[in-house]
Figure 1 (cartoon, rainbow, N blue to C red):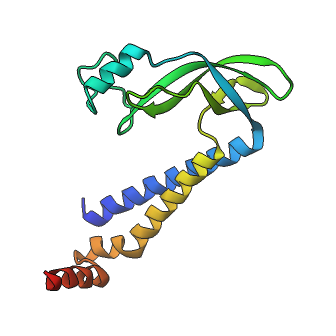
Figure 2: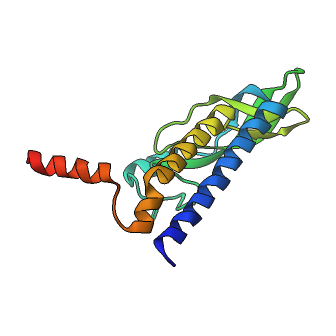
Figure 3: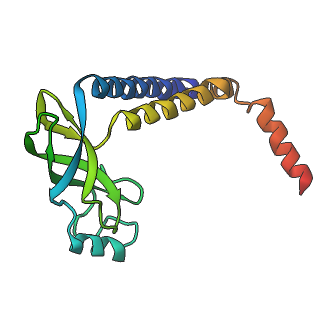
Length: 171
């Protein structure tokens, strides 16, 4: 498999990711409502936080172990929250979110719930998904601006050669 084929597979993945981010953004704006949620039962105990603090950034050997949804310096937790819908109905639901490792997560935060099914909630609103779409678009632009020619020819773009030559001449 050539470098161009591998790069184009990456471009296809970025395009699919961009479509997903835009779909989630539009879906949340069209049929979901924002609410303030209070944590009823937390998914990140004090002992787990202390264990994460002692083990710093590694997940292996901790009480919680490794979870694919954990991010760099983050932990994926699932909280039971209670909130009021726009109609005044009090709802309990489970919501997943990423929090900073070894820090006490906020007990009050904003969620988005589906108007026709308030049990379906998310902590990631349309602003988050739109930001992810912008970052994905920037990655696609950077790839098309100079990455494809670089992969096809094997030579870096001229501006990068000039930049590295200027750094070498200043040393």
